[in-house]
Image: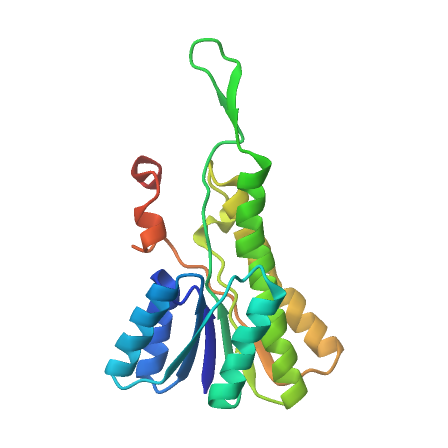
Length: 210
């Protein structure tokens, strides 16, 4: 089997890649962190696994298509797709001044859009590009969107929780679409991890985390 994993240079993506490689799956990793990709690929290969990489911004159609094409060129197919690339830009929508009660800071539109673009749009592009190739070539596949326990919503994460609530709906929608169109070779299973000691979580406001 061949797995394509975004966010593969650190955190959950790295851990999944190493576990799958240990089980004999050929892994193809995408990430914007070229040094991190090289490190993870080196560690996988040193442990006897097979790995290819492609520097990839998941919000780019071209980069993500290139990642999938790398998998097909190197290993001949795609069977597992895990869009694990994710970001946070935490903040309250409105932050009033303690003295005056007037709003002194807001979550900016850019702050909101950045997280939506990577976590939601990026996951969509990743899954679409993988699934299209699975269908066109008749490869048995599974798509594994990564949601979060925060799909239930946490203050300070209006942007992040919105993406994770959305992604949690995808298996239901996509399986419905595949059944409607007689696509029988692809399964969709979403995973919603809790707080994991990734660089992203370690970099969070630790009081908020507690």
